[in-house]
Image (cartoon, rainbow, N blue to C red; front, side, top):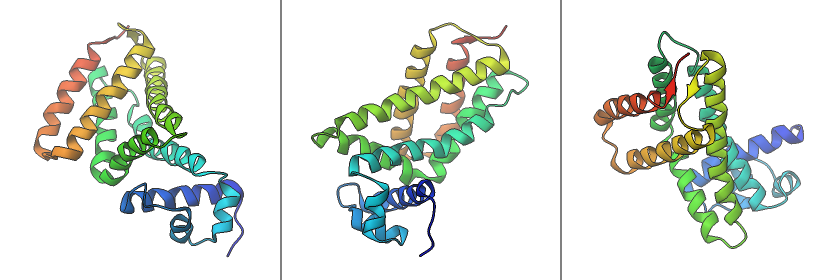
Length: 198
């Protein structure tokens, strides 16, 4: 087995955990099954992660990172604010449709953490991360397009996180591919109404 830097090995194990948890469910995924999924010994897992809590936090952060990178790239300024915002939502939505198992896993992780004594802070951290992510995206858009917000940035960030969370769960439960273009157009129109251009 090739020796990898610790950070790279953690990344490998985190991605293996995402695959295993998405396939088998969080409660049934063990450190042993994650190590097997990654093709490493159990001792390597314990060298990289001190606890299951630490692993779950890494999983939450990594899944969020998977789509945030795409959204940041999509938020390059376009001819109108509405087109720019719509492109960001579309990038996120394309990721949801391409990786529904990852997004379903985020809900399972939150429920698992809330029900597991001592893990509750991970669910809180997960949703704080969503709001922080939107705050960063709002800041990025504000700097590149010189926007003024009609509501405080932390309020808008948390609102966007809650709205996206609800829309994602709705899609995972109901599907209905045909409805989502109109829904995203409506969301885009509403959000751009909370922002004014210079």
